[in-house]
Length: 214
Ligand code: G6P
Ligand code: MG
Image (cartoon, rainbow, N blue to C red; front, top):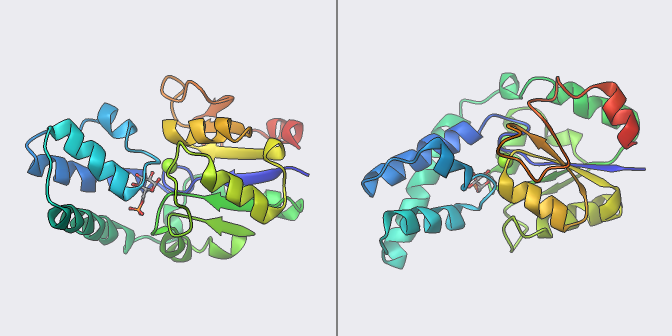
């Protein structure tokens, strides 16, 4: 039996755009524009590591206190968007896709770097669909380190080589590949070049393809 591991932001829900808006504000504070291309490098990356990258791009350093303050402010901005979320914010085809896997008895896990993952899953009504939830509260090493996916695989009792990971970030695809799992990119083929296969969304994933994976 195959195991299915889903990233959260940008795969299950469109929160990637909320992270982008919130980090754009932080970048503006340091006097530069966070472009979409630069933002690709933040996708899948933990809050702390994202802020470190922004400081690097700004060519500046700050005190630990200010670092803490900016990370908290970014999260507060981000949560203003998240707090308005409902089941309508689940990306097209995702609910049906996971439901089908569950009906077939396939183990399903979440593998996300976000500390806000439980909150988002509860707000969108998806929390109970997962057999295991591994998120930013339980991992120590950020993607592209494979830790999050390896823990998820262990929790659902499936060998890494039998796991299929759905990811929208370069860091996440790398993490899945390093873990020895099948990596499915959700997004742009030109960005997710190292993925085993890329689809623009879950509606595009046809039953035939999933049957091949089983
Ligand atoms: C995901 C997102 C990143 C985000 C990270 C931490 O991996 O793709 O953009 O920085 O989670 O999220 P958090 O909600 O804990 O700030
Ligand atoms: Mg993501």
